[in-house]
Length: 305
Ligand code: GUN
Image (cartoon, rainbow, N blue to C red; front, side, top):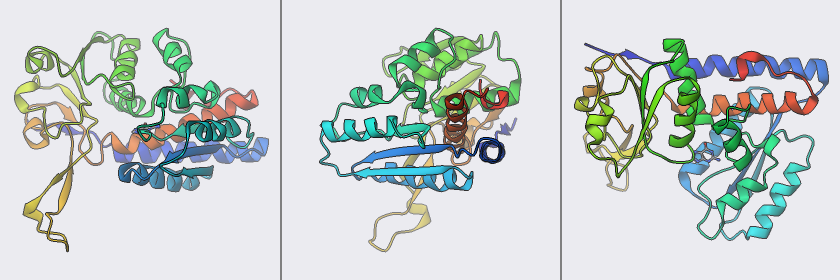
């Protein structure tokens, strides 16, 4: 069997086009431009790429983009002052503090300093609590992107067995909450889970978010299951030759051994081009929703859960 390939890139492009339509409508009807502010502290290379892509896509959707780049030596007080300023800036409807922060900064403190109604990442303790208790909430963008792909594929998810590999606050835990809200039977497996392969093989929906290249093998997958691969891992690819400095070229792989998994799964997301593009698309949608709410306007129903 060869799995259906879930085209997250195409889905995300459609979502961004919908966002752009809404942005144009808000500009025309309310003379307001939805604005997203990203705070980047330090020089983490992966974060820099993410922030650059976010900035480009925000502008492409017709939105305003505010970037605050701060040095790796930024103090807690300086970071909190910038967040406070953005909280009070009426042109900013969404605020994202790029993680990870340098080690000397407390990320919980920073995230909980964001006004909850501008917390487009859904990481603020009040949004986490709202999601957990079934109240409308800003939802973390990567798990939301996964859920949208799953809904598009399956429609109603109720009664399905879902296994989430990984328990991070950014992906694993909110993914489990979203699947539970969708009436799946949810198991969260992690590094201490006994016989994780057997647990994974029970899944109708298997979400891999562990950050370990190609950990999930074909033998972990129930035939016909849907596999959502959240991993983005850069590994050496000597078969592609060498870089000018003599080091091997690299390639991106997910947490799933794609080629063998695709022989067993019913549907699977590729890396790249699966979950990755959904994250920013959901972030832009969340910013438009936050903008609508700030204006007292009902957000478009297809941009909310
Ligand atoms: N770092 C990796 N993923 C994310 C994300 O979704 N949001 C933020 N703020 N930081 C991240």
